[in-house]
Length: 272
Ligand SMILES: NC(=O)c1ccc[n+]([C@@H]2O[C@H](COP(=O)([O-])OP(=O)(O)OC[C@H]3O[C@@H](n4cnc5c(N)ncnc54)[C@H](OP(=O)(O)O)[C@@H]3O)[C@@H](O)[C@H]2O)c1
Image (cartoon, rainbow, N blue to C red; front, side):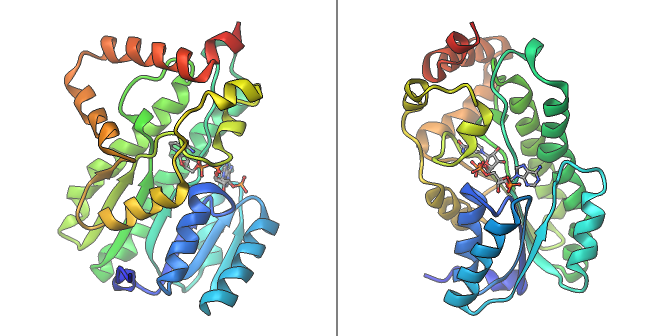
């Protein structure tokens, strides 16, 4: 069923299109007939995806191999995009980092903040003015249910996702009168490469404990159905309860989240 996403324009930009949720966004948008700007570090994967989508849907694509953790990545991307005017921005690229904060590698922490926060803010800043000028557009920011509450043993990641969530929630009313729809997608545990990257010490046993992995295609469907209607979308009614955590003292939610993390992910045990 067409969602008429071309109302935003002919081109969409997707960061993190080489895997997981971003790749599924690319496929869904191509199916709607949108031309795609595909961004990630793994060029071969992007090229393969691009060829598949051109063949299947007859769209145009632009592949941009770019590390979003680099300080000049926004300049490189806007240079490569050139005269194309993406009407839809899917700022999805990101990664997590489980473990004890005191033991985290500083370089990885810096990279996570750059990719999950800085590049999201700067790419939005670079492309949103065009949307405002054209008085139509869509901005989808991929946050996480972890953006809603403190996340012991995944503390800094949780903080980056709170940044994404707050940025999107703040921009929504700011851009509404300009005809720009803003949506936060807040996935919970989804079946992508995320978990292996976020927790490389994950044993097969601990990985199997990550129960109820959601299908990334379902996350994309949720986002595209919510776009223009909702501010934030979750994987299911259970996770909508994340909103209720805003009513609880942070100390409680932090303690509860710590217990859940230790139980479900085996993170504390692995760190010991
Ligand atoms: N999976 C989950 O359980 C889950 C839950 C909540 C939220 N999320 C969020 O969903 C988003 C997508 O994650 P995913 O689950 O689809 O994970 P994934 O399968 O690991 O995909 C992550 C994507 O981000 C890209 N990326 C990572 N670092 C990058 C960098 N430095 N420069 C450019 N691109 C980079 C990766 O591409 P390259 O490696 O090719 O660069 C890849 O395309 C993330 O923002 C994540 O925080 C995921």
